[in-house]
Image 1 (cartoon, rainbow over the protein chains, first blue to last red):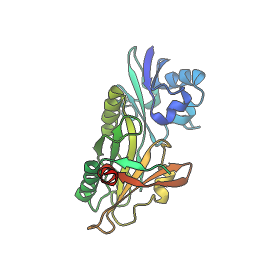
Image 2 (cartoon, chains in turn blue, yellow):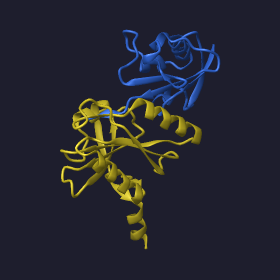
Image 3 (cartoon, rainbow over the protein chains, first blue to last red):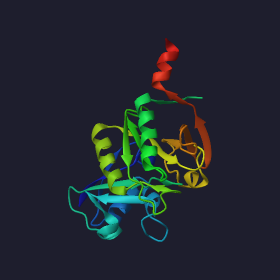
Image 4 (cartoon, rainbow over the protein chains, first blue to last red):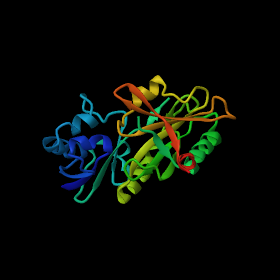
Length: 91
Length: 143
């Protein structure tokens, strides 16, 4: 499955400044692994050592927050758009 | 040191947002072409302790980012208010600052009748203040 992955500005250092890149895989996790092969650092910026989505990263598959629809195991389809959004928080 | 330029109406709108949420912290984005503040995007603070902390609503951020993506704009600044402390990044602000490109703007209502706006970059735990330059004031100075 070929999907578009929209990168936040803070992750564009891994993609030579590209704001969106193409990835492939059957799930969100597989797409991230595919991207990490070409843009090393992307996966660890998003996924913890334990294999979970970082607490302060939100990922959307089209308009759905993946935490509510299967997290990193959410299946993707051709033409889907994944958006990576760092949380905005403080005190 | 470069200043942080902000149109006067947007500076006023920041204070209005902070006042309207008081005593809770408000939060939002200032967006525009790279490096240029054109519009304010108010975001809902969904932190369970909104008087002391903030976390922007993820769904609203998604909508904002989609709009920015389509316009080739970016988040120039991330703002929030402090209602009981000065307009200076708290240890939590520094710890959670994710974006080295963004200017972090703080509005303090510690003295509620005399709001204070200050701007900072936060890079790997270091805080660098940028003087806030209101564009209306800058124009007067140039006259």
